[in-house]
Length: 187
Image (tube, rainbow, N blue to C red; front, top):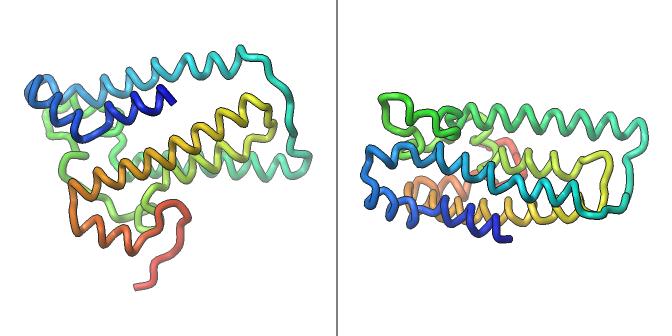
């Protein structure tokens, strides 16, 4: 919960706008890279708890279904990669701070590729990956549940940011394209 609140605060438009006013554009261009670093470092204690806390086995997916779950998890990883590429991997990672160009995420809205079928393909793929884990323990179940709630809350917050940034264009997109469950759009 603390991680989710902290991470969401750092990602909020209000905080980013305030920080940009305080630091200026020259320093703020490094924000996404620093944000990603902070997110990674603050996530490590959660992973440590997952490994160190006493745990109990809940279930294992039996053969041959474990092959199906593994294939679907692999598909989720590929879909996440495609989604990241389509949304601008360089900007997502914060590496555009090294380039002499403006951050892509500031003024563009991608409505093509996976984003034509679902508004949050990376989150959808993340949920598929989490819940198709072949061996489930109590700790992993608690982690998956927490991450799922975080994904849903994060998507809701992100939707608010997108409406604030893109207005009616994004509202129309919300009406046309589902949030998590992809479907082909009829024109």
